[in-house]
Image 1 (cartoon, rainbow, N blue to C red):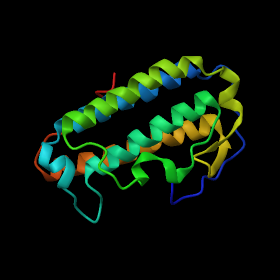
Image 2 (cartoon, rainbow, N blue to C red):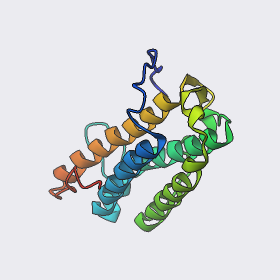
Image 3 (cartoon, helix red, strand yellow):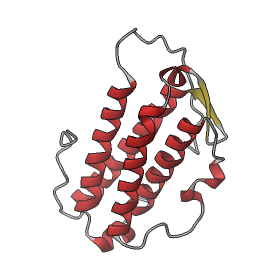
Image 4 (cartoon, rainbow, N blue to C red):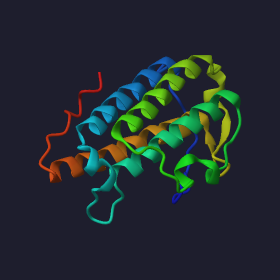
Length: 174
């Protein structure tokens, strides 16, 4: 999200095509699968392994946690956490063990499950300024957060395969 401006098209949603509950279930399915990918990593490689100029997977996970955490809070409170204040921009070690990473992941998952149902349905059709920088229709921004996770999880799959570790089946999100 930091490197690319989001180009929005007018959203002509088909009435009744989906619901906020369906999107929550979809997102949490992806989060369950990403958690399995994190679990599949050996501790050392989670924090230190990288190929092709990519970042270690733990750094990518920190970004996913940071975006989901600030995103759900901003969505619920109708605020905009500045991009520079997202935890993955702090430069600090956000977790030092795989267990700590998984605990942070689970904390954000719980926060999403708790706050999401409290967001009024019309909020998803309003404009939102994500992270003080990216303006767009709220539902489109949420889909970007999910896409970002899928993208980084794919990088995790590449790492696992290069380590000769069988990653979780991509359909294992249900």
